[in-house]
Amino acid sequence: MTYTLIRFHRKRAKAAFTNILSSLSTDKFDSVLIKPNVCGFYPPDLNLLRVLIKELCSKFNEVIIGETPSTMHSPKERFESLGILDLSKEFNNVKVIDMIESGVIEIAIPKHHAIKKLPLPKCLFEADFVINLARAGRHPSTKVTIALKNLFGFVAEKRKYFKYHIRGISKVVADVAKVVHPNLNIVEANDHILVSEDPLIVDIVATKHYLHIDPLSVRHFQLVALDRGIRIRDILNNITIKEL
Image 1: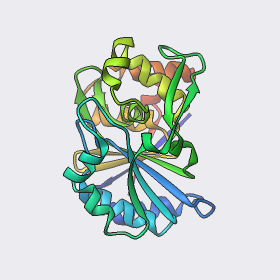
Image 2 (image 1 turned 135 degrees about the vertical axis):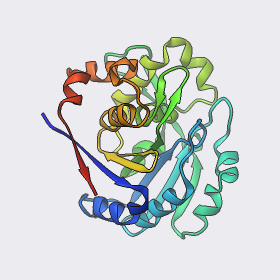
Image 3 (image 1 turned 120 degrees about the vertical axis):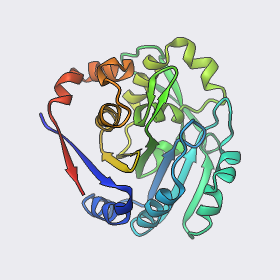
């Protein structure tokens, strides 16, 4: 099996996003939810976010930028301090939200590693299209924090670190990946942007080629691959990178 990933230089973001979105069947969709890593260690580049939002506004009637609280930060404070709140005001159909305020539902995790149920925001399931926007970086608990780790930010808890890290954060990330499936995963990796429908694929490429860490050493990669019945080594040998 071949795994395809799109890569382009951030200077080509506008043309690349236009190309990517035009190839997707988004005409039937009304709303898009973007989940950046606002309350974590690696927030998005504001210029890249602006370009992405502008392209999305031409495709969707409503663009939502959502985040949940972390132990360190609240979404509203971070949206303001990072300039994302001001950015949203440049557009008529963009809003920023603390996703917990949209309501929370308990989702059962099939064949869970650590957690039987997870609280997730209702807006995640109400949006017609979901974009997972992450920036590749190192992390003390999981070695790397990229697209898969950013999915942990969907967990609708205010003190996630204390509740879930003690259960084995790699196992928890793998559990989240079982039930949260973004339509598109966009990762900032130095001067390049990586895009795939599969968060595991973008994470493997970003880890190997940009963070210079062996993907085989990342526990949550191994668990996600195991849940799918595949091996990281087989993925590595069958990734095709399409340059835009």
